[in-house]
Length: 295
Image 1: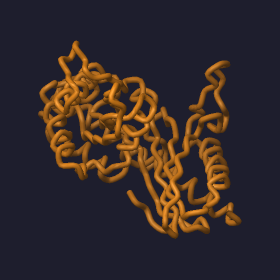
Image 2: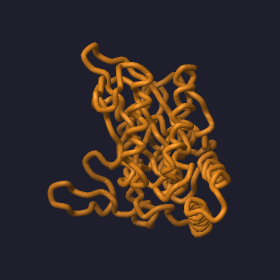
Image 3: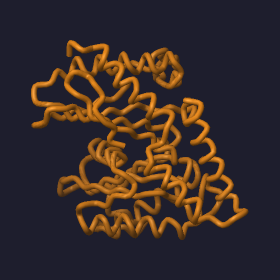
């Protein structure tokens, strides 16, 4: 990666844009939620305030939320690409974004309690790499806030409390329980990423990867697509609403994936994303030049 400066510029722009501007599908989801709430209701007022904040963040080139979250990079790179150099230049771009105020000093030493000045530390940012038969680099970034992270849940089926068996109805019961337990604490209306199966670690990883999907897509697995729609409809009946203040707009989307599992284990993992689904992606040339935005 001889074009270090060009790579830094492209990755910095990815971070900046992710921090200050919602992707179009998420903003459209907020507007659909607004249209569903009654005039004069608290839920409608919350959504109007959120959309005003979205517009002001874009105009003022300022972070959408003071919690700029954990940075999670997903890279698909050509075979043989130098991923060590790529992660190194990404860390430089993160440090630059922090110095310029697009990222808060949001990374904390778990032992001392001190903040890392650059947001570069052990395990921060997070990187996932996959080498593919391709000629460009596909990079996608998610900023995952701590408030929504706190309300994620993992279940082991069967679950007697929920009367949830090892089937898709059992999965549905788990997800609805996670929504009810979160109430407004995850900054509703939220988006759910769900993983059926896997182990305790891979379940969370796969559930969070669902946030890379657009809100208007459907699972390619028909039975999971139907389950996504069912849970989204059921969530409206809970009347949790925006920020837990009541209403039908409790969720903007449900995205479900599945992994294989062991016979002894049947995990259902639910990751919660707040309304500020800060997710961006770009195609970048091997020289570091930004080719086009993915969303």
